[in-house]
Amino acid sequence: MSEPTSSQYSSPDSFADWQWVRRQLPPHKDDLFVTDADTAAWIERLSQEDDNLTIVTATSGGLPVLYGTLRHKFVFGSKPAHPECPPLHFHVMKSRLITVIPASSGLDIRLEESPWAQRLERCRTAHEAFCVLLCSLVEPLHAALDGYEARLGELEQSMRERNRKRIVDRLLERRHELIRFGLALTPLREAGDAVRESFLDEPDELPEGLRLSLRLERIERLLRKHENHIDTLLQMEEVVSSVRGNEIMKTLTIFTVLFTPATVIGALWGMNFDLLPFADWSSGFGAACAAVLLLTAVIYAWLWRKGWTGDLLRGRKAGSNV
Image 1 (cartoon, rainbow, N blue to C red):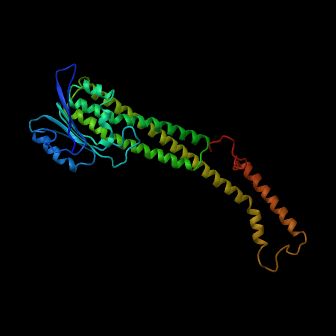
Image 2: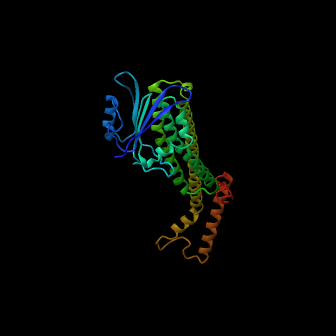
Image 3: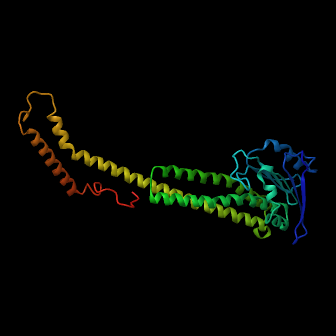
């Protein structure tokens, strides 16, 4: 079992000190130098908490406490994590922040780098430092949205230039990807709101809390914008498919009507009866063909005068999206 890491911080613009106790393995209460019963009870429950959880409560002495678990979806410096990534446990008070951070996430190392280390140094309370930690979790999600925006633009371009059936599959992939972004953001938003609820700080009193709130709002606006784009593309695809389906049915109907004379004549004179009109006529075949062509021309002229043929028989124009 590795030793816990404890950091003492003193904000340069205040006299308030706070402590951050970090651990990468499931801790024991004695390892974290915990003396109060409330925190010890939280540590005892850690092994039972694996899903996203945010609890706002208070100690027996009335001090505000925020604790819970975040199962974040992104590993720093790598591709998105497996859905079963290790959880991040946290226990936040004004003067002390306790975190159990999985080593595989890389978050512990990231927070010791610039600019996160400097932002932690400027924090006046432990719960403001927790906002910095949440910002570090939000940043890779925000960066991943830039790549999503590029893929969405490529999809729109492909749909405009060459709309095929596979476009629908790609649209649904982008839609599912957007849902995963929303699911990854939800616990971070809940934790950020819980900081406000627990400690009731105004934005001017908690700069990192305001920064976190603005970042979350920006990501939510991006998600809504991308969701509207996806919905628009899906509606356009639905319209195009509907128009194409109607055009196909109209075309098939026109061809069916045009071949009705040939079908009727072939059906009547193809019967197995001995006495059929004009059966023995030497010019019967030529007359039948002429009758078929004449009636077909008359029907087509009638459809054309009614305006029912439209552009169906003229072919698709180059560059058409339909």
